[in-house]
Amino acid sequence: MTLPLLQTEQYITFFILSLLFRILQGTASASIQICAYSFATNEMNNDKDTYIGYVEMSLGVGDMIGPAIGSFLYDFYGYTGTFVTFSSIVLFGIIISIIQIPSSLNERS
Image 1: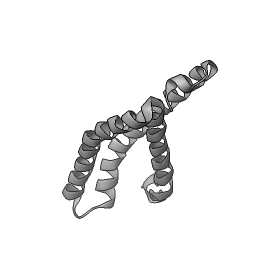
Image 2 (image 1 turned 135 degrees about the horizontal axis):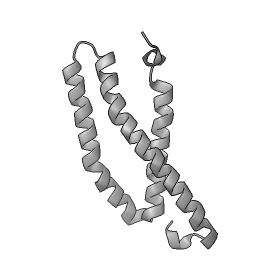
Image 3 (image 1 turned 45 degrees about the vertical axis):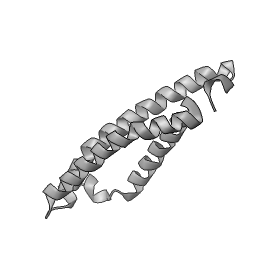
């Protein structure tokens, strides 16, 4: 699915959805990079240094392979398909995070 397949009226809708999903992606990325360190240090009391290293490694690997995967998807599915794919991944990650992160992290001591 590429942009030329969209009707003229759909360009505005696609632009607005693209903008909203990009804002959501940026917010999720910033939240993950901040919260991952807090989660690693609060939950893993014994080996904090090890788990902070794992967080750094996973964020670095994600930054390295993300553009490669994005360009691979772009070659096969075009801009719209790539955008929808990554937006779906971000939405899935948000849902899993809401379900999996323990509510004890929200309690104040």
